[in-house]
Image (cartoon, rainbow, N blue to C red; front, side):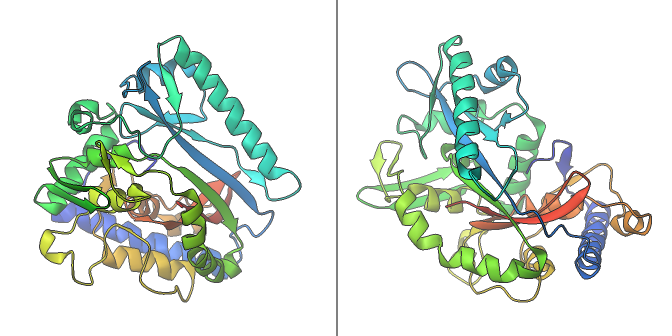
Amino acid sequence: MGQLDVKLLKGPKDKALYIHHLIKDLEALDIMLKEGLIEKAPIRIGAEQEFCLTKKDFSPNNNSLELLKAIDDDHFTTELGKYNLEINSDPLELKANCFSQLHHQLKNLLDKASKVAKTKDTKIVLTGILPTLRLKHISQDYMTEVPRYHVLNDALKSSRREHFSIHIKGVDELSLIHDSVMLEACNTSFQTHLQIHPDQFVDTYNWAQTIAAPVLSSCANSPILFGRELWAETRVSLFTQSIDTRANSFIHNEKQARVSFGADWEKGTVTDIFRDHISRFISLVTIEDHTDSLELLERGEIPKLRALQLHNGTVYKWNRVCYGVGGGKPHLRIECRY
């Protein structure tokens, strides 16, 4: 959820206004698809690299905001936990040596962060789950002091109406009841973004689903959480349960979690995927200033579909559909969380 100016969605008036703009965003997206306004070429790639900040003994270091200020680079941004940061790469055309370019940029940015971190007695560690994390590190004292994280935490707690329950059984077993969304801060990942031709989106999305299992099996690297050996890739279960807004009584029926792989092949258009998300998952947060996407289209402007993007930012599919605007041109992409 990249937007900073969010607030808790509460009261019938707030909710009605937000749903009104969600519907307009869906209508605007349908119009852009029909009129060929969504960018079809060139195709681009991008990536997000999250990483952990530790002390010399590799225990979590909660100085992300201090480090972010010292790095002073827009490629870096905060994460939920004070001991994590994230790099957002520049988009690159999918051609020639684009993967080498992506690797080179990420390496240079990580080197830059490492040099600054050394001046703050901090190490940078790339790992799915930092093995030195302990229960004290998931208290709200370790939540990054950025309003959107606290608003999201309040929204998820309000929606669930009970504490978050974690149960993961592997070699060892972990059962835990926790009072905040901070369990999600245990996870870091490398996420890839692939721009998709709008006419081929649903077929390509289904291919992304098809290859998920073999790709994930080669990426699995996070068995340890709070000193217990759990799944070969504990992040899958931890992410699903850490922000699950379902009450315990719903977990074993057909109601999907906000973090999920999906239950069927997608059909129709990309708008149908968004519609399904809106129908399945209640909206949690909103923004102060809404814009009318249909009015913007009528004036020849490209809407950012802020209401739709905000809702989409609180639904965490393993292959997530994304809409964006770059250089004044709208595009569609798939964010892969393998």
